[in-house]
Length: 140
Picture 1 (cartoon, helix red, strand yellow):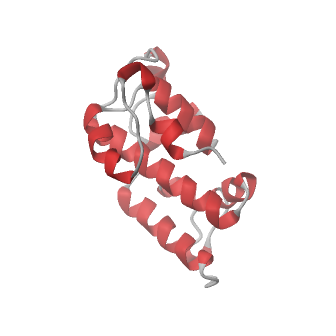
Picture 2 (tube, helix red, strand yellow; picture 1 turned 30 degrees about the vertical axis):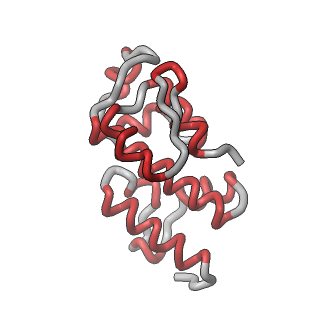
């Protein structure tokens, strides 16, 4: 399993993530486009889809260089998504199973696909809650 700290660290800018406590400073400094590409590899979310999730057009993202730094709110949003996927991979034990679940209609989410809820912190929180239930054997 790829460690989240490796994905979120950026040696080019001297940013090293050792724990969740580093997320505050990381989001303030902003993630780079290079880091976002690492996140997309980790999550399996295509660039076109992430653009809708973080409210930037895919054309705009396509113009960004690897060194482009995202604003604090976008960076924090991407970090939350990474944390969610890390948790999901742990619960499902296989990346492919979790990624498939993220694109399934889930009854506990009123038959919505979890991936469609990643655009808000409330949606991410709802998905984490359900994953927590699954982790403890409470199927909903």
